[in-house]
Image 1: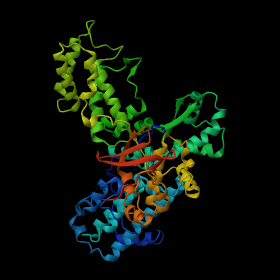
Image 2: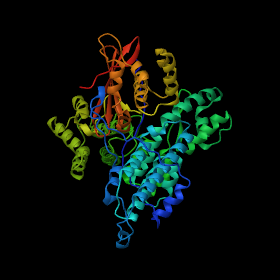
Image 3: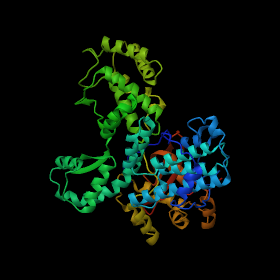
Length: 552
């Protein structure tokens, strides 16, 4: 069973965008927009399931920005003056016109983003879902205290749409034009890049494979890619390189003749350095250059090591659903182990394996100065163990460091960031081919990035359910020995209330568990709040299929 790893996803849902200046007349505004915007389309409201089929209950988490927007007291960011409050009443016609404007604006932006990304499924991206939820919340409001309140709410929702339903380059440009920027806004932008990375991986691997035969020096070629000096290649390839660079990615040498790409954290750091918190600066620094030791020797001072531990802890605690959360936790654990036990070429002990006095004093000072942190608790616990061993650093003590890490800072075993929806172009092609042939061999792959076959099957199954292709979903069910699946009509009745889109919005990581020599595969989908949802697959004729569990 192939147990590939796959990368990156970031989820920390907040909305803290700048307020748009007021416009004097809502009537004038909406009447002008009505001439050019798409007409308002009646849409069915999402029905949140009480139960979620075989994966148990799906708790639907609200989006912070939408929750704020739904509260009357928060819709007017500048408290209305007495004059504003005395404006003419807001009529039903005013609200309908405003709703028409917001819906039309959102749909135009979705169409534009679909065209830019050459797809039709951008609404399945979590960042677009944020805007969609804001629009839905706006449509549910039926009364306002004043024209000013309605107008401000409209402006706030449009601002969310502008930021979220746009290409990364557009969002980056808007952020640059802001006078003040919050850490959350930068993380939103990075999150968008991380979520779109899979789509570009799909295209990059296909295009570079054709180009790679002409690349003799990978290191030099990476520099050319990043400097924009590559001239050879098909028009599609050169356009893709320009698009990826323009949207905030940078190319890297992966070794063995392979070139990949990542978020250009250096560009973000340089552009917004004066507006970022120290924590976020450290986060960006970690992402662009994670090395802190060379040849088992620390290349930073112990004071700087202490600073990184405290700041890294803060990042992990404040942003538990970061797309890189496991990487950050691994780094924290490695930094802590090196701080407590030293490295091969940065010893903290004497020749008698006794911890040096200055190191012990440093531990005590660290505990005293950071007594409200988990890091200080770890150091305190380790120092207590050291005292019991007369300050001799034993192999047993070194192996205990991992057990001292609190749960909030521990890595998730076999857990990696995951995208569930939307599918990549390659997966859509696999979906269509399987639908046409019902031949399991279409899942042989290999698939772009590091998606495992079982994950691809699970994602295609979820996609089939949310698009209402229940025949396809039914065909992906495990029908082997011991199975007890319902007939198709009962299956459709049960599965139609399962909200995989919301699951995709909330999940930040998946943990893979393989049992019975790989015959049984469990996916543990981990949400940003720590809750989990499980999905079981079993091999049928050598290919993973979904084990259906009926609702209780």
